[in-house]
Amino acid sequence: MLSVAFIEKFHTCRLPTSNLSGKWYLLILILLWPISVPAAGSIKVASIYALSGPAADANRSSVRGVRLAVNEINASGGIAGRPIELLEMDNQSSPIGSKVAADKAVRADVIAIIGSAFSSHSMAVARVAQQHQVPMITNVSTSPAVTLVGNYIFRVCFNDIFQGRVMAKFARKEINLNGVVTIYDMSSDYSIGISTTFEHAFEQMNGAVLAKIPYKARQSNFRNIASLISSTNPDGIFIAGHSESGRIIADAIQSGVNAVPLGGDGWDESSFYEMGGQKIKTGYYSTHWNQGMESEASRRFVARYGTSGKLWASTALAYDAVHLLADAIKRAGSVVRESVRKELARTRNFKGVTGTISFDQNGDPIKSVVIMQIRDGVPVYLKQVDSKYVN
Image (cartoon, rainbow, N blue to C red; front, side, top):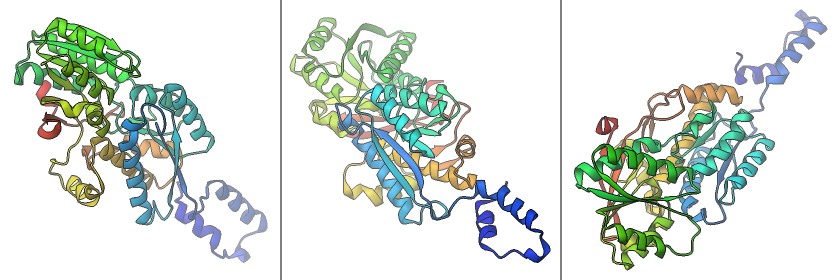
């Protein structure tokens, strides 16, 4: 394949027309012209997150991570001299809104899509992206089903199967919990997936799941759940949610529940603490990255952006997603979507902020899990475990 640089040079140079007949000169131009790309043209990339609605607070950190990376790349000259044109699209906190946003991105002729955050939102985007063959990278949607939609779909986070198993082993073997209650959002693919995995793994280690309590994230209060928890008298509560998990915990504490709260990466947001997580005396959750990690890429990221506000894992993951895309476009030497997809799939040992990233055959990275401890309402880095932890 001829490079873009070669084609552009061909169009601007003065050919020795004396040695070429007019018909041959015209034929060469016709053959080359359709694949010529103006060097000055921008590269359109869509960012699809909740900018309004109940998920907007939890999505803020992802939106910030995308913006940080795009601004950084453009300030450094763009990708092969071409700036990224970021099209931010609001999924209005729903799967239907996510599909509408994805359709809009396709009509805008974007090269790729970054997002979404919630797995149910990403599933809706992924179906559209796969149908129209638009590469998509979600930063923090952990449902295994997302990347199984097709070969154009990637993620930079580990999936729910891995983190569910890690938290079950941690709960059973390291903090010695015997009986737990699981609480899940019946409308969330993420919540259902991680809670199911946690339950299965916990029971395999001879732990008891005393109750499985569903809820809806938009409930105004969760006092009924607190009452159900109290009636089972568990050692621990595994809440497979996002920001609303903080409110569930606050209601449970107010009702006198003393069980240890546990969660997944959905807790790693400022809004979780604002909604009640600050009331936790001791709790634990899994996440993808923390400022306590010692890699060179992580230290640079913290030094550059840590002074402008709290950095969350979803921020770092979104930042990595954009840089992964930029790296694939550079290696492809093209903005043809299929070429970009192929280079994404070939990614090996990319040194990201959240770890070294290589994609497997499903577009999933093999990564470690960070376990955080909450002490008096403040998250503290506890440890990092890899796949050997659950094997």
